[in-house]
Length: 424
Image (tube, rainbow, N blue to C red; front, side):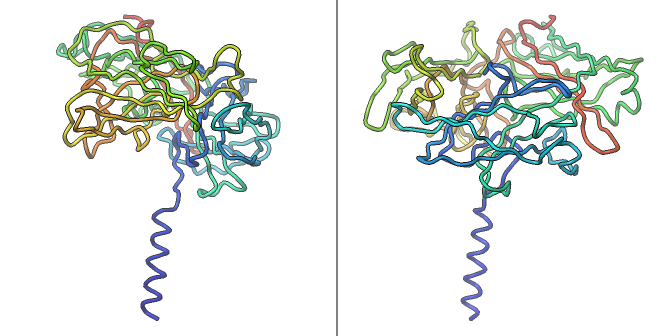
């Protein structure tokens, strides 16, 4: 009897360890789900941001490799500035129902492998948001318990009440960073509403491109004057300049575009093999004219991308010595900016190169290589890509105001700007 009880306890413990734990991040939990897109309606390049009380809409789409349709549902989860779920009840931040259904779907046509394409636009009259802040879109089957969730996506609801001025000076505060790092000089112009306890209530986060591993959070003003907050840190708010993103175009499998070495068609679909690349560290900066790591899912002109676009296994290879006590990752919107097992490369000691693969739909993709030391969560882009002040980067500034009743973080300021367009 004791042995039976022990085995039952061990089994229960194992199940608990392997149970799916949903996080407030951009994660796909179901291996059948691919190409999850969330953006402003009609424009893949516009981020998932809506203004509170406006008619702004977001468009969600994804492909399910299953052979049968499902009645997928979704809900919104309100989060604080650090993406922790708030203590608010859903009725406090949702107007209407607490969940809705995704009912628009189409079967793929002549695609190998086949899939079902889902598409949905929100918010709608049945479910809308009442508060600004960070939100998680949670898509699931049956109910929103963790084991039923198929993917999650971040989106933002803003109240544009704070004006933001951001510049990137040529000479940073630390002169050794000159021509390498990008320093963000920041000022906020706040209405009287936010002048009470600004040090306690106002927090700023700054994101570079779509990355979440190196986002700077909890930034506080260094000085306060009438309706103006200044962020003048002794060493500045500094990001690695990095480099322009590498890219490849596989809108068509009928020809090899630049950076593609070979396209192989087989009974299971396509393999797209990219040319072997090398480190760019120490090289002179070269303007590539990129989209800062984003993607555009798009098939040939005569194809309907949503249902006729086909998938391929894309093979990456990077010729370099092995990094000891560190891992190398492929990073960009092509993998939702995640440093995980799907983007981690393996070292081929025989050929002295890192190799990796990703399952991607026809389109244009950008990426870079990141080195992550063991025990760290923040990647180093400079180790492989180099470090250049001239590099083209997008920055997003989020300004949060801590409301006390009810207690939550309002998103009262939002600015997306490009390093080449910023005042310098």
